[in-house]
Length: 420
Ligand code: PGA
Ligand code: ZN
Image 1 (tube, rainbow, N blue to C red):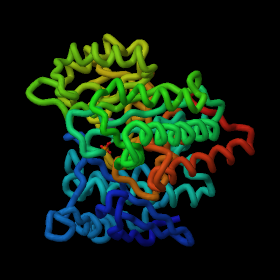
Image 2: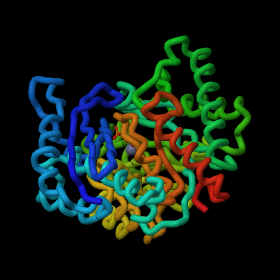
Image 3: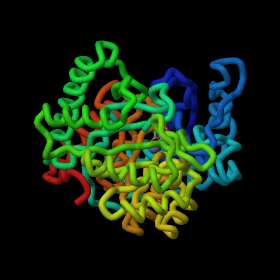
């Protein structure tokens, strides 16, 4: 089955910004994929090409669309649809930059994901099975979701703030039960927020979680614990946070709330929060360039807490290898558009697995109806995902796809929840 046509178009993401959709045609197969987009992006991420013209205040992606139609398609035409690795390599070669700045990671990754979908179809496999095959993984499992119920930082128009407070249903017996627990806690939290802060407190941020007017971090986490308790899941559900601390790091110092911290003090602050609020995972606790701070954080908390690198690693094996060598963290946050192709994302996961790291497959704050990453997390078999709150269809498209996959695996007696 050979690539006959690749056609891209400009569509829109959950924040109302333009993004790229690519469509592949091979024989009777037609498959599409849409690219997500970040707000608190790492500075070493692959380049998201924007038009920088009048339309959409510079955010148009027509150049990236043209790159797919006029540059990528002629080169990939006639290639075997199941040659994912070769196709990705060809696009990387054509771009010929370190950071995909020439064609744009958004053009390359839209094609890469659509190719994977078409490849799965050609082999008459489910997408997660096909992605598992590309990874060399046969142990499929449904992920424990980190659900961002209280949005902050850039996703909520707040400064000097932790970005994400997530519920983590570690003790659910399967994914459907994890969903039930999370949804019930989400609604419990909404009632508690409205009771405490008034009706506006039910409004939400970019990732579907509520936005608190509260300044004190402990008060925010306290309310989440209360929601977990009132929903009756104190034993099963823990908390994870993404600090996105590059956003509140300036001149070697961290400015969180109305306090100022150095890396050591911030580590102590996190340690206190973790003990008090059953926090099991901390993402981007230190800023992307503060390698020394990361080392300190991991040395102090890494034995009992998952220390996740997002902006630090940008899903790039170069930074992952450095972090492995320097013991900077113990888990990878995997975002496909951060590196810009399916094959490279799989390589980043594999390098992490080889070094006994955990991997968390993640959405972006600007998302779409595309549920590719739901299949990816099952295919990789890494057992953890971060797809936002269980609200708004840009987030629930992923959770709903996971429910379908769980049902599919259950029928075969093969549904496993979490990393086993
Ligand atoms: P982003 O945020 O998609 O805006 O980068 C998500 C995250 O920091 O994990
Ligand atoms: Zn993050």
